[in-house]
Length: 286
Image (cartoon, rainbow, N blue to C red; front, side, top):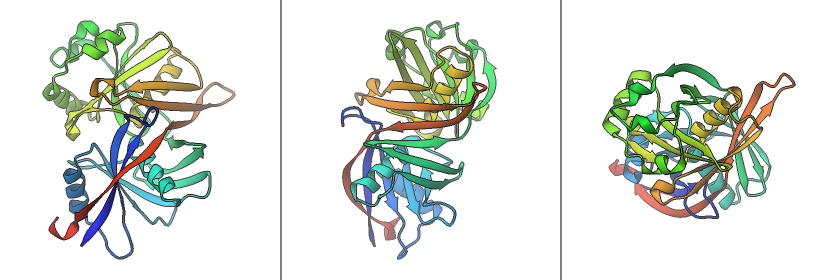
């Protein structure tokens, strides 16, 4: 039996670049086991593939698989999923809910931009830059900002880099990044640099067989919360640039809802997405 698998690009800039994800609708006529979902994700070869099914507690249920294993949440695969739903005229409202392993979250559609709600930020330990001496040039790390683990759904190590030239030139040791990610129980490392009204980022997650991603919603959501909480760049909306090292320019938007006490109440990550193509996979052979 062959099933359609849709390919979407999320967080694209001017309908170019972005981060591709597979999108699979699980229909009433068939079910997919976890090994089959992982096999489909591996066969497609994208960083994540989303599987959409019915939910008893939300409008949709979304599950996310890398080529290696299931993850609780994925920003770009969520944006890609709803871009596919838009493409096939399956959405008639501006507000939807989705069931994920990170809880029930909301999706808001504003013109051609999709915003997904994330969890409130959780801040974990800070790490000495010397811990990264075997996986990158630590002289490029900016001492003005602490290296910290932060999560709005998935835990990442946020690492400040001095300038754009250094973040672009950085040559990571993926095996060492994998070891450190395993040690700290994080998805990976999210590098960033501030300057000239731009925030440029790179993301490495080799522990999940993703050496580098062109756009990461959850990581930039965590980074926006980090910048706000520590008052390094305290504002309610952020624009992050990513993917240039992969020749896939991406733009990730983050909006923070702030209480009267100046605390982060809600986090929304958004961007544009578009349909790329449809592939057909034979699930009987998987």
